[in-house]
Length: 197
Image 1 (cartoon, rainbow, N blue to C red):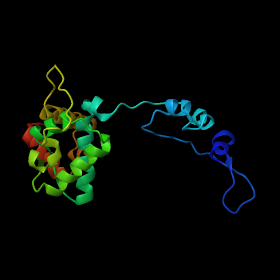
Image 2 (tube, rainbow, N blue to C red; image 1 turned 90 degrees about the horizontal axis):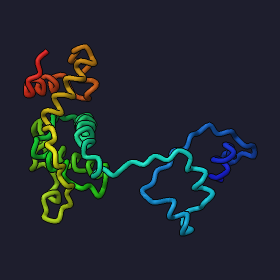
Image 3 (cartoon, helix red, strand yellow; image 1 turned 135 degrees about the vertical axis):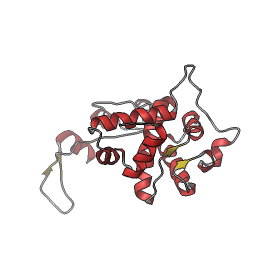
Image 4 (cartoon, rainbow, N blue to C red; image 1 turned 180 degrees about the vertical axis):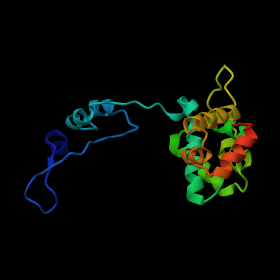
């Protein structure tokens, strides 16, 4: 039935005898090697070729450490709305720990780590003490540090806020809205990072 939908773009709704045209676009995701599973007979070859039209490969988070600060920002904005908190940022020490962790659980693990931190954090900054204990165990997998010097979390945040301010013609209200934070939080960050208008 699924193959018919993919191939002919029609299906029969439950209880109906007439086929219905489908305009759905299918996006399939997996963390398995489907080519290998097809060869071993564990995944249907015909289904594989029907969904394997435009393959996209996304490397694991441990290979995309530059994305971690962006994802941290995203999850901070998300959990601020969810928990009605006003957390500004992550301390440089905590960010260093987040960047060097190997993330066997990928992005979901980073999300869970930050949710854990939100439960414990009573200030405006997530510190090392707010992170889960397992990150500090001797056998906790960590990513290798790059040989070159990376910009600090503060310089990254300053650039991001400055660019968003410029994009919004220096409107603090619009900038805060785009960043997913309160205007007062934006003002505190600007003051801390010495961003002058």
